Length: 110
Image (cartoon, rainbow, N blue to C red; front, side):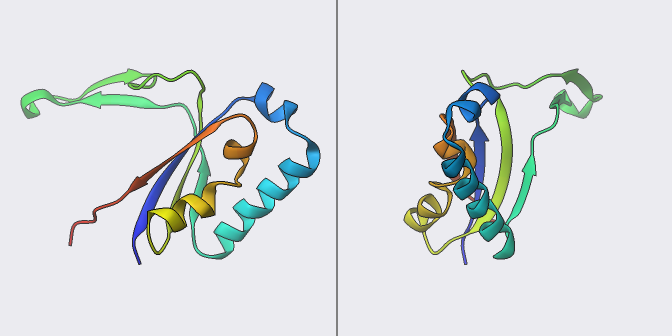
């Protein structure tokens, strides 16, 4: 089955503005995804690395990409197709709590 990487963006203020019953339902959806085999995690502090010309690793704290909302977490899910993946994450916490979820289809190497 195809796999998709999801990236959730959101902040505490948006979460706090979301009604408690919607937050509970969103966390229940995360729990259902976990039970179905998804790998879900909260984002820690990122580190950038470069190794131009394989001449040595350069390391820098912080994200390379910038967005209006911080990255809140990631998930690796299985879905029949993109529409199914979107349906599975459209009711997760970042999606319903004033945030955004990106869905990235993975073209896996064999």
